[in-house]
Length: 269
Image (cartoon, rainbow, N blue to C red; front, side, top):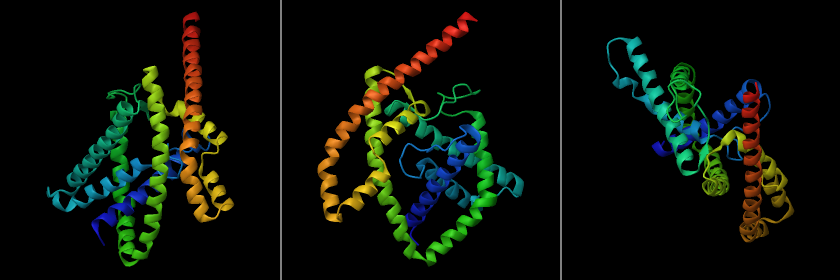
């Protein structure tokens, strides 16, 4: 099995599994409701895909770590996993913050944070996750890779996943670019969690979601579907971005008003 196919499979598994973990975490721990944890429309989180690839590669170098003491060797391995995952988290957060003017998460209230993107607490949690991965998940990953090498026909589904993923990524990137344009004009940084719900509501009202695509597919023969999609995408996206800009302006005004009202309440106390 080629190394590229191996990495593609790991990214595929990590993205889907990470999305499921975040989905249930938000439902039962943080937000107490079902929320799509990713900015993409589909059930995948790329950061977890990159994370699984990284953890697998780090675990693969264990044979080169030789201190003559198994406990120290494992501690070093988990430290490398912690550093690697923290770097992935920082790169993703920094890129979105600086380029898209969008803060995906906010650790500014955490001790020792760097730009609100990473902090010691979550780095420590990454080390625990690395240990969980090594002892519980990594053996299953190795068996899965062995199974994949004996069932290469499954690579068709991996290719299908990447086809859908790239289409989704293209669409979501356009939305993010519209957000970036608005944020740059207003000279602000938008918080992902604050703005996402309103964008989701607007997307539902405009039927910009997978269900809409499937309805188009059912209503049109394949050839006409492809042609109609190509001809209408530009106009539909123009309408969508115009409406999205209006939604962002309204959302930002309401968020600022709540913050000011909160500040006034504190002063009155």
